[in-house]
Length: 264
Image (cartoon, rainbow, N blue to C red; front, side, top):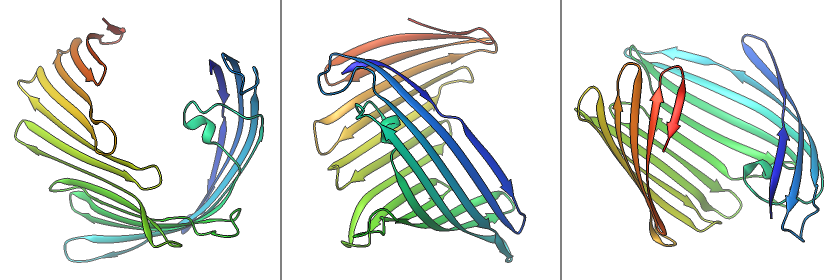
């Protein structure tokens, strides 16, 4: 299927409270399509939706000798209704669906005189629409911000005792060079992906960077992108080399401050 899509999604937010802060959000959504080259879907399907979220959040903290520990428990409820025709799956816009979910979360933040350096969060969602297995995967998140940036999250299925997903990122700098690496794992989708990146400041105006993505489950090396950037006060230029499994391209992007960009 191919065609056009119009997605209108205004959201209204209201907050109140101090010791216990409560935030409410109401969203109204209309999604309409004009499709061609398909016998599976109607030529003009549409979907109407309404969603509402309310979250209560508290903050407790205690100061120690060299750092402060902040605990932020929160409890939220999300409701969404969606009606309409069967829709083609183009991207995450089509994943909007009927929802009735409770989220219980506890966030731990650690701060020193230079700011936040460590965060830990645990979240347990509860799906009220799934009577057989209402407990959704429990999620653990952690982020260390210095001396290196290290982030990870893990989804644990409390019904089966299996890890459903695992993602991690690391980044650090040595003088003028920066390095990064990441990993993505999803058991149900059979995904295991790795990414690597490096950037180097050759001078104040000239820099270079490279990134590659490796699929450990299907196809090996997927994408490689290299960029050379030159930036002055009022203008800049970027040359991009892109290598995918079935194509290679070179593009040049010129940036003019206040006027926009031109790509060749």
